Length: 295
Image (cartoon, rainbow, N blue to C red; front, side, top):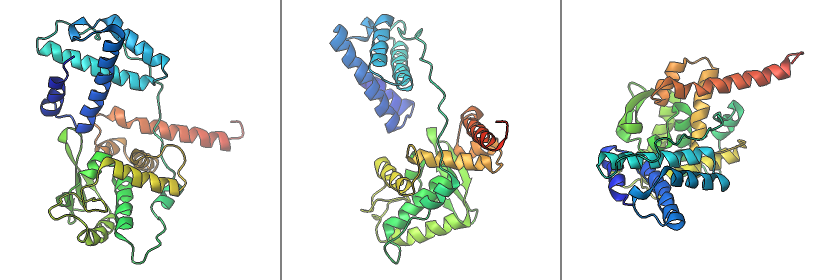
């Protein structure tokens, strides 16, 4: 199958992120390899619904999660729809294939006590070294604003508005939103920026930089965050996204309006935010079972 034009369309026309395009490439390359090895199929016109079903079945047998399989199916459907629009195919052989049922997975968040430990890492140096100030800012930004990993990486010096006490965040599809910040967070930013001047490469607009002064990247941030989550004894899965979940969960538990949380998180619809109400309900259930004499 010729896939380059499809990837070109995703990147330049649909303006998907490099990460999303990479995921499409991985999924479709796996499908292409399966077609060649199992059916000796080279052209998209030869692909049938039965062939696609057999690939999905092989992944189920191999232990792939339903969520992962559904993502790959979505990539296939998108590719064939692209070929139809380009008049290279008459119909989509995957159109009638229904996605597999995925069990609802509630977001995991850290407790307040765990976040207290995360945000107060021990320092063996005095004065505080650049890397610790940067790492503390990373943790505070995630927990205080609920921004995504990609949004933190691309946060620029010009996005900080000290007089309004806000930051401007550029989210998915380049949609921008304004998030209020505290005096404490602005202080942490300012203390970090004093050290950043001696490290960052000249002309680097992004706030967060590596030890070598270059723009931070996903793996770098992921490693820093998981390190501190582990040091603080946070249980379960560890990632920057856990801090986003924690931000939303703690806001909701303290009585914040669901629509306000939706705007802060940059969700396109309220349905995506409502998952956090389920987290709170589960917390109430556990408290009830422990406290009520008839539970």
